Structures are given as structure tokens and as C-alpha cells.
Length: 88
Image (cartoon, one colour):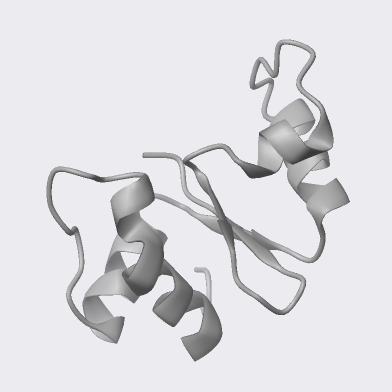
């Protein structure tokens, strides 16, 4: 079971429309945590770990550089150096 701290949950609540533009999937911290656990989201410690995660998962990055990877809809910058990766 994943544990998401308040910084990660608040980041997702504020930025969820980048991945789900039609409608919010969570409206509070509890719903955000339940959603992230259900879709097995991960938190990584650095931009480089985002790239490593994509490579390990076999996600086709089509020669994308690190900046392009970080701009993917599934990648949320938490603001403290960490990134949340949500596969929608």
C-alpha cells in the first residue's frame, strides 16, 4: 500500500485537470489518496527517477529528452524536488 503525504495529495488535487480535463476525480485529500492508491501512482525523488521509471515500465518515450518527459500529463511536480507519476 502506498502512502502519500499531504504535499503529494495537495499537488494532485491542484493539478489533476492536466491528466483529467473533463472533470475532477477527487475533491479532497481522502479522495485523492484513495484514487492514487487505486491507480498505483508512484512518487519518485527526482526528475532522473521519472525517466528511470518510464524506462523500467517500458513506456515508449520516442527519444524524448528529460524536459519533454517531465511535461507528460502523467507527471506532476510536487514542488519539493519530488514527482508524482499517475497512469490515467
